[in-house]
Amino acid sequence: MSTLAGHTMRLLRTAAGLALGAATAVAELLGLVATVLALLPVLPWPRGRRAVLRRAAAAARGLVALERRRLDRFLDVRLPSGQDDPAALRYLCARWTLGVLGGVVLLCAGYGLGFGTFVLWGWLVTDITFPGMVALGSLGGLFLLFLSVQGALGVASLEGQLARRFLGPSLAEALEARIAQLATSRAEVMDAVHDERRRIERDLHDGVQQRLVALGMLLGRARRLRGRDPEGADALLLQAHDESRRALAELREVAWRVYPAVLDESGLRAALETVAERGPLPVGLVYEVPRQLPRAVETVAYFVVSEAVTNVAKHAGATRIDIHVSLEEQELNVRVSDDGTGGADASGSGLAGLASRAAALDGRLAVDSPVGGPTVIRAELPCV
Image (cartoon, rainbow, N blue to C red):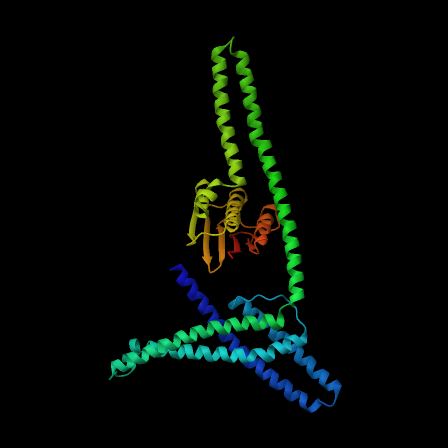
C-alpha cells in the first residue's frame, strides 16, 4: 500500500508540475512573440536591438528561475545555479512546445478519466439506454487515461533532459565538479574516520581501561589477603568478578558502537530494532524496505539512525523518537524525528560526520531543527 501511495503521489506531483508548465509555456510564448515584434522596428539600429534584448534577457532570467523552482519542486530535476542569458533564451524558445504538449496530455488524461468513469456516474445526469455501449466507451476512456499517464511521464522526462541540456553544466564542467566533489567527500570521510578512531580510543581509555585497572587492583589485594584473611579475599574476588562483568559489558558496548555484528548477521532491520530496544527513550520504528540493500548503504543508514538516537537521548530533552525507513525506487529514505527542544547544530562533529558518510555514497543528509523543536533528520541514500 505504501508503494502504491508513493507512486500516486508522484503522479499527482508530476501532473501539477506539467499543469504549471503549461501555464508558464503560455507566458513564455507570449514573451517570445512580444520580443520578436519589438525587434522588428529596431533591426537596423544596433542600440535599439541591444535595448530590446536586455529587456528580453531580464524577463528570461525571471522565467528560468520560475522554471527551476517548478522542476525542482514537482519533477525532481535539480540544476546548478547560474546560466548565461543566451542559454536562458534558447531554453525558453525550445521549452514552450513541451509545456503545451504537457497541457495537451493532461487534457487527454482528464477526458479519459471522465469517459472511463462515466459508467459509474453517467446514470445520475442522463438516461443510459445502451449500457453495453457505455461500458465499452468507458473501457476506451480508461485506455486513453493509461496512455495519457505514460505520456505525462514521458513529457516530464523530456522536461528534465531539455533543462539539463540548456541550463546544466557542460561535460567538462560536470567532470570538474564531480572530481571536486569526490575529493571533498574523500577528505571528509577521512576526517570522520579519524574522529571515530579518537572516540573509540576515548571510550576504551575512560571506560574499559579504568575497569580493567580496578579489576587488577582487586585481584592483587585478594592475592595478598588469601593466606591471612580468606573471607576478605573472597569478598574482593566477588567484587573483581562483578567488575569483570561490567568491563565486559562496556567492551561489548564499544564494539557495538564501532560496528554491530547483527548488521552482518541479520540485516538492517534487525540492527535498527536493536537500536530501538536499547534506546533510553520510547522509539517507534517503521521499516518499509522489501529487499536486501547494498552493504555500504545499510551501514550508513544504521549509523545515521544510531547517531541520531544517541544525540536525541543526550541533548534534545525529548520524550519520544520516531524512525521511518523506506525505499522509493532506487533511493533509501531515512527519517529520524523527535519531540525535543530542537536547536541541533548540523555543523557539529557528529552530524557533520554523518553528512560525510552520506556524501561518500552520493547521498544527502538534511537537518531541520528549529529552536523549540521538533528535530527531523533526513538521509537520502542511492541504492544503485
